[in-house]
Length: 369
Image 1 (tube, rainbow, N blue to C red):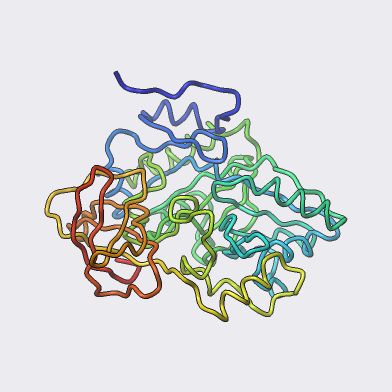
Image 2: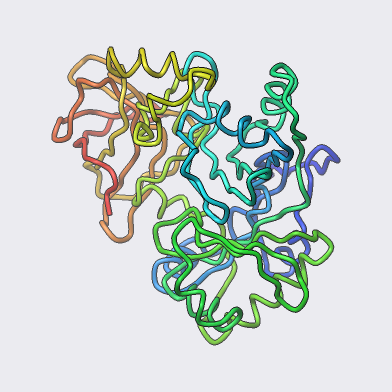
């Protein structure tokens, strides 16, 4: 008989939970201690809706860590090894957050709301606890907490048309990773041009959890002429697009240089930035591993695996395939790998799947598409 999640008060429901159930959600995962939809029963339909049309996602599990107060900017800089002095209110920047050894703890979007207020829009880890501890240890004049903010994503090439119908033509001028305050039928929001896909789109940062179902239904209504439908962060599209999944493509030793985040590390960041000295040393000696794609020589679709698969070059193990998928656009099995730096695009490798079967493949640069 199939396994089921046991409900628990330790796993929170998003403001859109009831709306996703009404929309026919068929499965969830747990992300940042919250239920996150993973399917509405039609994976290929959801994929093509993202690629060709417009889809809406409950991503309330993309929690915010708020830094507020006179030294909020200083704390943000201590946490992020990217120089922030040129950041302006209304901008979002992709930033790595590392520990003192340069190991990646999270890869959030940092949103600057004001000189004394920032949000870290986080991937799946308890970054709130880290930020609280750092602020206390450094005796900073800053309050660290989790605000009442729950993102809803609208993604796909037709997302901009939906947003124009809701907010007006000025949406076109909103730059990527930029945001502004907005209201929709009195619902308080931040409207951001962002999202975890390469198909274009927006995220609506709901600032009143009591109005989650209302916002969901309003987006659904506005998107109906464009055949909008429910979906979720799409694993197939993200592999094709080479998007990093923190915690999935990373391990307990991964540094930013290994997973193509080196361009977001400023080695001349202030010396009190956590991890910057270690990152300088890693940069000087070179990272031991790097991230590449692999195209597998197997005609039939290979099932998804929730365990990392060993990668071999010849008889030598050289790393692991951290995720795999069937690509409808490439009509091939593809994966993302974390392998030793000596492995290069064009190399022939074999991947050992959990059941022991080995499949040959060729290493490729990312992204695939």
